[in-house]
Image (cartoon, rainbow, N blue to C red; front, side):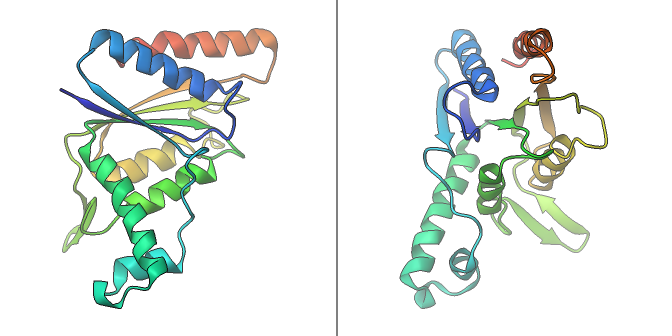
Length: 199
């Protein structure tokens, strides 16, 4: 049995292309692998706080010295990290906001990129601890950015996923969505067709 963790990060519940892609991914996966378990964490509904002093204190100070705020921050970080550790496949649904990922997704990453848990420092540099996992990234973009200098999504996500040991990463981009109705349809249909190759 394979465990799938889907992270939704679109601010919109209705009319979101990244959510449309993730829902189609889920439907495709369930059809092909009905016994597998899919968990969805929606960062627009259950918002993750941005990195702050309470979380840093929870990570860096002894448990007996933790304040109530530090204990609460650490408990949430542990929950998010445990969900990632338990997953065999990570799916990130990420619209492009201002050439990058949503801040909600960045906040989630800040909680789960943890020294000694998802990566470790060695004499030869940092080493990811999540080898053997796979990731699928579903993006929605108003323009055409893949492979260009203005695409700060794919290079960043490839880097942070590799940093924690996830090197098997597939990107599916729905692009040109705001250029025209015809471009929207074409970009969406191309992405939906590509989804059949990753499930």
